[in-house]
Figure 1: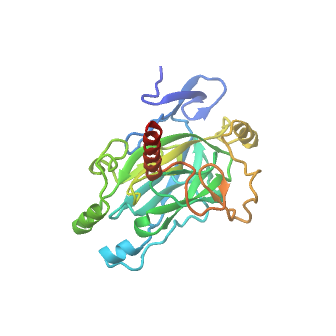
Figure 2: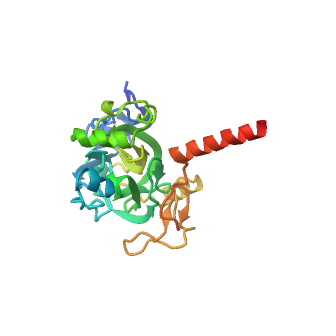
Figure 3: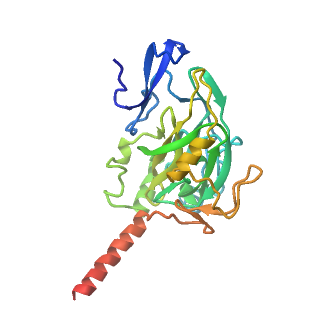
Length: 329
C-alpha cells in the first residue's frame, strides 16, 4: 500500500523495476500533489517518479529607494538592481527577503524540469508586465508564470511582475498560496520610526492570522510549483504571500515529455490558459508587449489592480455605511 501523506494522489505511474518505467505495472507509484503550503516547504512529499523542478540558482538581490530612505537612513541611491538577472526568463520557485520592510528580494529559479532522470533545460518567453501594485494581489494571465519582479519607490513598496510562458513542453496549472513571510530589519531605530509613522491596527499587521515575529524570511512554491503572482500586505508590502501553481507534462515511459499544444488548447477552453490571441499585439523577439496586465485583462494603465485592494475595500465599506444612513433617514 502506498500513501501521499498530507498530499493528494492525482495519478499512478507504472514501473518494471525501481529505475525502469514500463506499462507492465509490476510496480506502481503514486503521483502526489500538495494542496497548500503551511511552512517553508524545502522537503515536499512527492512520489519517486513525480515531475520535479531541479538545479535551482539564486538571483541577485533587488530593491528600490525613495524619499523615506533618504530621510530616515540617509540613503539617496539604491545600490541594488531594480529587477532580477534572468535572461532565460526562468520560472521563480522561492522568494527570500531582508531589509527593514522585506524590501530586498532574492529569487530561486529552477533551471531544469523532468522525471525519472530525464530532464530538460528550462526557458521561457516573456509576454507582458503587470500594472504596479501594493497592499493587494496581482497575478499573471492564466497559464503564465512570473519570470521577474521590478521594484518601485521607497522600500520596494510598489512592484510589477514580468509574466512569461514556458518554452518547453509543460503547462502551468492550478493555484494555491504559500505561507506568509517577512523581515522586520535589524536597525531598531529605523523600525521604531517606521512603525510610528506608518502605524496600522493590530488586525492589519497580521498576515493569514500571524504576527510578523511568527513569520519566516522566505517561502517556496514547493518542488513542482512556480510563482504566478504575489499578495502584498501593508502600505509597504512588508508581508508577502506567494501565489503559486503546479507544473504538469505528459511523460513517456523513458521520462521524456510529449508535445503540449493539445493540452494548452484544452486548458484554453476551460479558461485556464491565456493564449494572447485577443491581445492588441504579440510578444516579439524576446520582448513582452508594451501594454500591461491588471490581473484580469490587458490595459494601458501603469498602476492599479483589477482586484480591490484593502484600502479601497475600506473606502467602499465606509461609502456603503454612509449610503445606508442616508437611505434610513
